[in-house]
Image 1: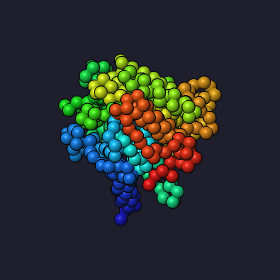
Image 2 (image 1 turned 90 degrees about the horizontal axis):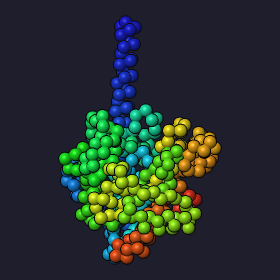
Image 3 (image 1 turned 45 degrees about the vertical axis):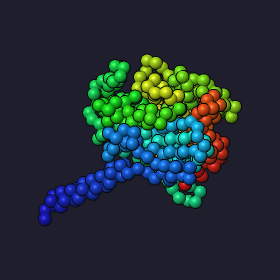
Image 4 (image 1 turned 90 degrees about the vertical axis):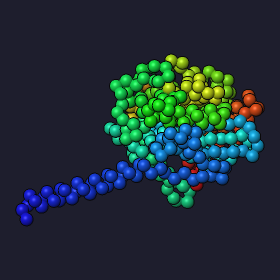
Length: 373
């Protein structure tokens, strides 16, 4: 056999092997990571129960329900609106695996944009996943997804995305951003249908308070903050005071009336829920970061952000300790705790009493792995 024939066979075999490996990794993104159903979960439902149009699609997602022994109000926590903001997912997971409802009902959606967990943002160099060790030496792995719905589920992007109910014009790729599609519609895009399903859950279950968990880059002005619909402002103000009494500093921002499609605006307008969004500081989200690897996701340390802080370019303190995942998840969980308390105090008929939420300072000391089942 001639040498060039042998070379061609070798190259062909190598290409086939690479295709098999990459294809396996691609398909693995479609398989959701394990979430252990904790003792407080009374049922696990599907979002398609509230909007059947999602059934059988990657927009359908798990809804974990905590029904308290005593009647009361109801809360919804959204994690994974943007799957590349991991503190939202991990906060939801810790709720699912640890919390009990003594009064009222808690709903938790850990993967609000389930489709977004099935791919990564191109050209960002982000890890496909990250892992957390548990005290018994085991490893829990979670996917690091994309800010947007997978283009395999919705394509192509228009040049300009027009928000359906208001006519606001946005960049075309925002058409796959779950946090630009509310309140959603049944005859809209795949992403808008997911938004509609969540809105229908809120309407049909009479959700009193909705908390959407997010992360943002340290150079983003709205950071380590609560963004609140005007009707939820009294609640959010009490939460800020409660957190500051624990030495957890947090800002409070009003939901802009001219920025449409977001949870804190549209859910507050379209339903009776008190709608808020929480942001934490994550350098893996920013444009000033260095290498975007698993260590950056977990530890939140980056020398370029330390330098940016020294130059006065950031909206949040940043030193060599960075902003580790424990801190970011801890802020979200502390906020959820305070919101449940504020709701119960201001509206006794909506009382929600939750037990077992990991404490902010204990979480820093023990690590997230200590609370994973």
